[in-house]
Image: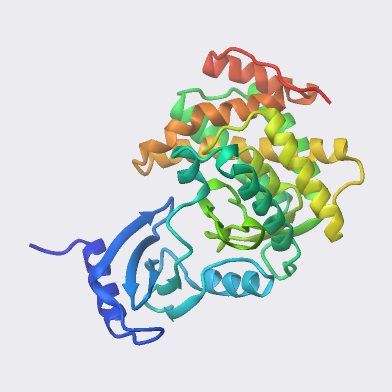
Amino acid sequence: MTNTPQDSRLTALRQWLGQLHTPAKLDLDTLAPVSGDASFRRYFRIRGPGADYVAMDAPPPREDCAPFVRMAQRLLEGGLRVPVIHAQDLDQGFLLLSDLGTANFFDAIQQGLDDAGGLQQHYRGALRALVKLQQCPAEDLPPYDEARLREELAVFPHWYLQVHHGITLDADSQARLEQVFDPLVRQAATQPRVLVHRDYHSPNLMLGQGAPDFEPGVIDFQDALHGPLSYDIASLVMDARTTWDEPQQLDWAIRYWEYARGAGLPVPHDFAQFHQEYEWMGLQRNLRILGVFARLSHRDGKHHYLEHLPRVQRYVRQVAERYTVFHPLVRLLDTVEQAPVTHGYSF
């Protein structure tokens, strides 16, 4: 029987790990998968004397470990809890990382983490960590600019409307959709720019039980960009994996805004303005996510992402129904999804 490419990768990973003696001799018999993600990366946990480690398999040329290595060092120097890189082989695409624990926010919430169990403390820790992250140098990173923001939105009509729902827009409908995209992109492009994680949400935050101020471990940061200030708080409070109602969104957004102002980040002085900015940013992000999740299902066979579509649809409607400029999008969604309209807070 011939090995599959993944089997060959695992064999090579075991051989590489077996040659390491720093930080300690590893027990290859304990190597076990932790998870994969939406990319080609895979993760494995392995034991060493007195500690666990995580091995990353990022097969070249589909994945490049170098951005992860550079960003991990940058965030570590910024005071964040990120994996320490104990060994690396960039040519093979292997890293050995410190283990930040087994429970991310998403898993903990699914298992019942609530306010009584410390959910609010953990999220406030995540807000403080986000402020630290946004203070890290970012000017040398690729720009999250108007062109890139607009390019991202193209997955919504193609993968979500056309492929997933079987709807091809005529020229008039496409023009109206572009009129929705234009203000989203323009406002995001004019915001102050900071380091943007891009997926600062519950699956990428490890519980910080025992850490100072409940500060979480932060992972999956290798695709960071230099972009809009409100992007990551929108990711957190309108989480594609976890449903938060508007009062909770507002509570965390206000706390972040206060922490950011205290740290000297260039957030607006008026919270109402900031609220509008992060909601519009969240709408751009969630329209993209609808397209990305549809693509992951139809192109890549990762159908479990469709489970999250109703939640993301609700977040899209929450914002689109509040602002007149986005009402053409609401009418389009009414046609596409045949879903009832719900109303939220008004500002």
